[in-house]
Length: 498
Picture 1 (cartoon, rainbow, N blue to C red):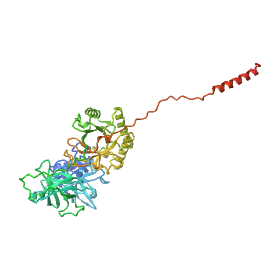
Picture 2 (picture 1 turned 180 degrees about the vertical axis):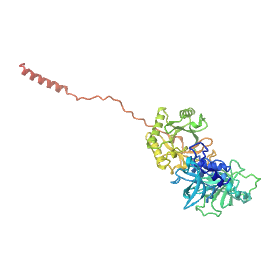
Picture 3 (picture 1 turned 60 degrees about the vertical axis):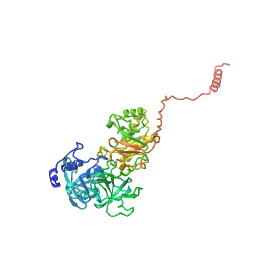
Picture 4 (picture 1 turned 120 degrees about the vertical axis):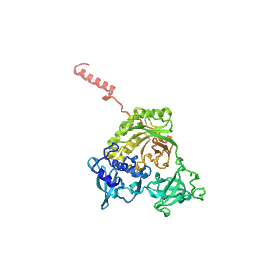
């Protein structure tokens, strides 16, 4: 199938692949990929299609699409949040419309029932690159020209300084995506490669030494100047001697030392809710338990608290935010406070406010903005701080600063990196509590000791119910007696008595 055939087939028709919210833009783009013989890509971080571009290094889309900066008909474009596409958007490029605009084929663009139509959208609203299905670009023939003899021996340590995640490829510099390198991450490598329009470093994958991976460290083949924007990593030497011979595919190489991201970790734990069901907490040093979502108690909250108490495992609690205004934000805080007081629960590891929009509730109700998210965090945290509780904010790393202004409260950051179940970064300078993966469950590390999270709740003063008793003036009884004697004498004289 080619793009023209697909367009002619779907115009005016609507497709709801997942059964949620009708024919959305995601459904249309995924239907397109499936018709081309590829798999669906999910929005696993924010719930919006911007995740498809933001997580491209790890979500699998680069396994069957190439990134391009100049679009041709049939390329898939992702739009970020702006006035033209408030909740982000995904559509298929159809043709140039002139004046900085393009015509895009997609769903949920004003067609009846969300059906496919073609609309005019600004190029300025798209992310920096689009996705071209490999069936329309030769399927990555450049990787076929790669040969291990192209590798140049060089042992070193690269510290990445890129603001946008750099895709890691396996088997060749242009092979399938195999993760990403984020700003601040450190990687030891043993070879470099100059070609395919970039400079690369290469190393063996630690879990499977038969896999060699590649990461670009410059957008050009020329060596970039120190500190320039084209230098995506800085380099330092290691004590090992450089190998003097090219790679021998038959000879196993020594596995380079993996950076230790656990050096600053004090404790290992997890966070759970009713979605985990009857969960065994005994394997973890600490647990963060969902107590409520909005003004609804988590079904397993009290069971999970009891499990932690019996196992003598420190625990904290969190509330998932559903507030649409200040009144609801305060109502949520009051609900959780009363729930804790009712069951005499003082969390060992504080109270956390979960600020996210995993199910799209905020977006659907028009409150997916910085002002609302910040105000909800502020109201919740101030409420519990005033009552003596340790309180902090949970959110994805990208939400802090984007949707949540700096409020000075402790942070619990979620940044899953490659999301392979391992700790692949050190966030100790950014937060006390770090959620580093969701596989197989949400796992966390603490960078501080337990006693930092101690709460000291204040007792609420109850008004005294005293009866309203009237008061009367106090009399001088001696003066009163003298006064009565005088009037008695006066009365006797009047009556002629002595």
